[in-house]
Image (cartoon, helix red, strand yellow):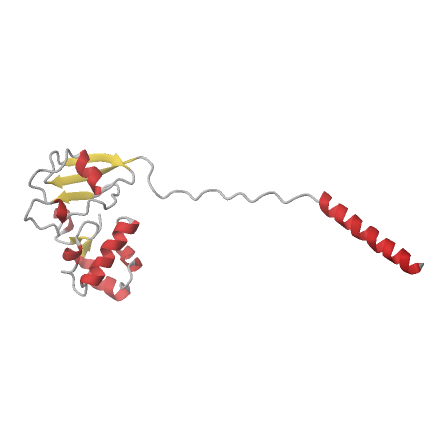
Length: 177
């Protein structure tokens, strides 16, 4: 008989525990706010010069590409060398884009003291840098195309094959708008 009482007490306790658990307040759902965007939402202004119909300051939407800036400047002149620039490269506010004429070198920006422009130089131009061969130059261009333009020279550390020593060698020879 005592065994039957013990079983009954245990069963009642288990049912009471289950009832209490069902009555316990539920934890509120966790709400995760979307990450704040680091991309500007309004228009950006870029300076486009060289072989375009209307060089000067143009306004394009955030996340625009070089091709959008060329179009905003009235399009390329017939003598423009569009193979000399990356039309798919992303733009940042305040950037200068120079559309070269056929046969014209693209490497230096007049405002950059003869430095190579990191965000618009071709892989071939980048190979002219000391210690940068075809593989590393291709990695730099691929990184720029995948992640957008470099904001600061130190962003090169994100490119496989570039460490602090290599960055120190390149720092004085590169310009980032």
